[in-house]
Length: 471
Image (cartoon, rainbow, N blue to C red):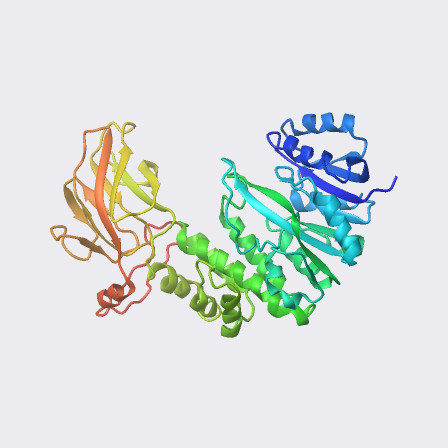
């Protein structure tokens, strides 16, 4: 039997959502009998396939492939594609769903316009049903449009997702996904560069579920290393698609900014920070000021744009880059960590550390549970890590601090990246610390270090406790 379209759905740990996903497929206005639905069971450990089997019994056009082991989204898409028999193919993630007219409307547009690729709108919603505003990767069409030259709409290279597109079989050879975390990016750049005509459709919608457990919501070092790998692979397209490389560079610049954002605003060990910058430097080819200006002109409202950082990334060593743009440029982090170390008689150590994530404000009040410690000899409080700060504690007696001035001054000034106070010991099981905190500005840093040589003396490879010292 011939089908109008093949729909490939990898399935892994989605028993809460797979029903809604499949309902949106079997109820398509095109008719489920006209669709080849290929479910790829990626060795899911939950009950997702029990739900899938209920649909199999009712709809013979649904097929199942089973991976012997978990292979991830990209390789599961490849496996499904190898069994596709239709003229058109599309991908649907198993925790998402689509509007009920999507496939009928899209196939008609593709055939009527003689296009080999169609991109439809998409909407991001959170688990509580909140719909997020469009992002730089979500340039939704407000009118139907056919592109014969992608340089007329350069923003298209940031529409990297695999799943809001329908591909003609002439493009199947470019749909070869990797096993990395960012499997869409190179494939999409290949597809866009080889599509003869592209239809941007306003008339159907992909509904993307923003899951708090997804890789995009839980950034780890591996994410940033994989994203840097994608940057390197994108640079390798320069000789392949020289006519479009200025546009591909837009995606590269966006990814560099993504890596830098997470590097600057989240807490990492020094070892990891150096690893991330080393990998990014290794991956980045030539980025010019003209490239960055072009990006800024196309995306003037992009929230955090690291123009100087992108240029200096190609020049500075990793440690100097971190010193200049992270340690000296004190913007409040999205997440910071405050810690209390408890000395039970043998000194402070990591095993006696209690940490709290918080967003620093001018005034902060944090509660630390000390109930597990039976004998408290001393307490050490680190208000923040990796920052030059001015701080004072409002409700407790301070015995000492590694500040540049006196503990009797209004504020203690810390030009170490591991600021800490020694506090009077407490007999209470709950320790509340009320403290004021301000990040030292660049001008203040320059003044503070005017009489010092501003020399980086040491980067500890294992912890932040020795961070950077200045002689």
